[in-house]
Image (cartoon, rainbow, N blue to C red; front, side, top):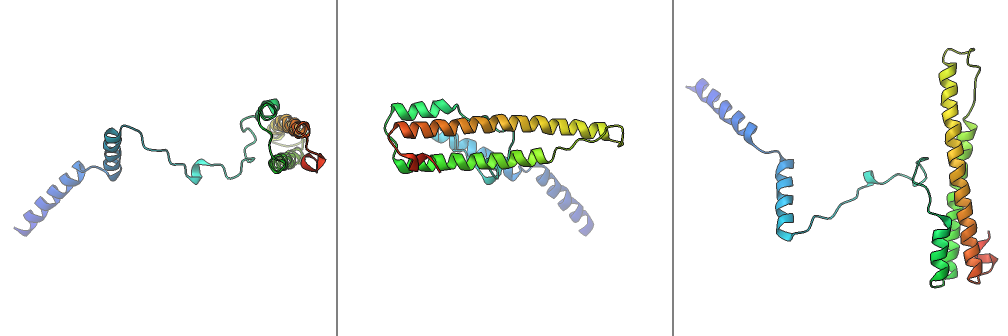
Length: 168
């Protein structure tokens, strides 16, 4: 009697486990019910995993805004306070310095070898060519950021601020 009871208990337990929903399924159903009651979707939660560790880590990041787009919006509207101009210009200068340091590191790592002298010389040189192309893209982005800085400085000057606001 004891052995058959154990076997039947195991069968019932396994059947219950196989038919039970996972915790994720239950939570998903509850969320859908809640959305159906309120009529609006739940807010999106952004975690640290969704954000880059540093905004300048990615070399192929989205291109910067057009430098004249921001300047025209500020010159046609209200006058920004000097402290705001100074902070924005300093942030742009810091961004440029960071980009310049990254570009210098990439350029310093480029080193071609004689292809026939090493076993993987051809593949190595192809990697160096890709680094060189990356450096060229970075240089274009850096030039755009420098142009944006100049536009910001000019806009601050047009609003009547002295060089203490827009120069180092």
